[in-house]
Amino acid sequence: MPESRKPTLPPGFGAARKRPKAPFGPRKAKLPAGNGRPAKKPGLTRKDFTSDQDVRWCPGCGDYAILATVQRLMPQLGVKREEVVFISGIGCSSRFPYYMDTYGVHSIHGRAPTIATGLKASRPELDIWIVTGDGDALSIGGNHLIHILRRNIGCQILLFNNQIYGLTKGQFSPTSELGKVTMSSPYGSASPPFNPISVALGAGGSFVARTADRDTKHLATILKRAHAHAGSAMVEIYQNCNIYNDGAFFEFTEKATKAQRTVLLEHGKPMVYDNGNRAIRLDGFRPEAVDLTSGAWSVSDAIIYDETSLELAGIASRMFLSPDMPRPFGVFYCNERETYESRLHAQLQHVTRLRGKGDLDALLGTGDTWEVA
Image 1 (cartoon, rainbow, N blue to C red):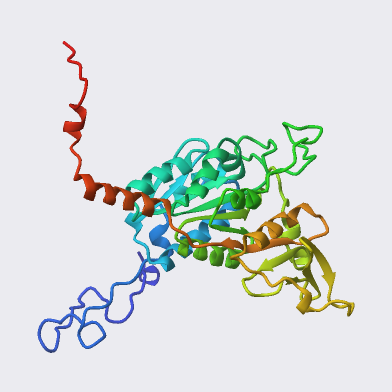
Image 2: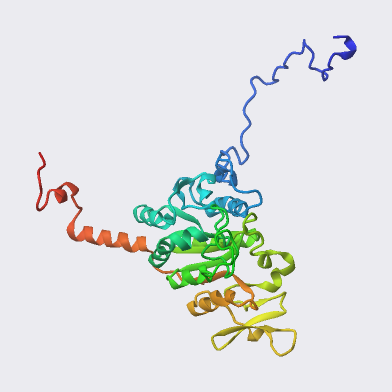
């Protein structure tokens, strides 16, 4: 190349450049900070819980926000990846285990609670998460859901509720509103919706909560509390399906209407909403919304929420049936009680002390036996 077009090199990087010798012999490795002590091993990050699988949800799906929130939360929980298991059934949400760099099971329709029950019974030290949807959990899996709640298996149940069957292309689901027009109900659904919170409370759930995909701060707070709970912790998550049921929960999640249409459940605090302008009071056992700006009512008339009260939880859970009432979000009920796996293993230990360790071969050879030629 002509001299004028040859690439120039920075000073000192010519062809004859020699590496300068170290002034004091071979260069020594720098000692880590802290008086020569080895550097502290960094903790886990979101990246450690993120798998190498391409996330295959529709662009704009609320599942992305939930996934990102869980991945960010996991390092804060102090759990070992090798002791974490995500179990799902069938549905859009059930792809969740593929995207977590932990152990996982993508099981069959509605049966995630049964697999979780067996796994927790045999390996009680594992940290088990169930990811399910309104169809998977409340239709074919409804029976399994209520029994894992009544047994109080130590796990977190994340119920993604989008009020539609998204994976199978938009049929009405157990939580779809009455009159919902879909491919399977062209003239409107004739079935009233299931209320997941009331179902969980009726089944004896020891931790029941509701949050939404669009409020990731609240979502993370609720999931953290659910993880700290010893028994079954069911969290209903309002999740937007922007393809088949877009905007189903926008009145509860969007800035223009959220303050007027939601009330936050906080233990020991009054049920006040609409930026402090309105409150919920009890007229006997019936909740009613009152205006605090009229002078007729004050904050002292509002319900002081008690998350340990099953009666208050039931009242709050049924508020969604009234269109003139705000939708509650937060922890409806929290009651620490003994878990199934702790009772089971205590029983096993007791029987072992009484009768000694069993012998499987001896058991199989006891009583009537047949020899097959």
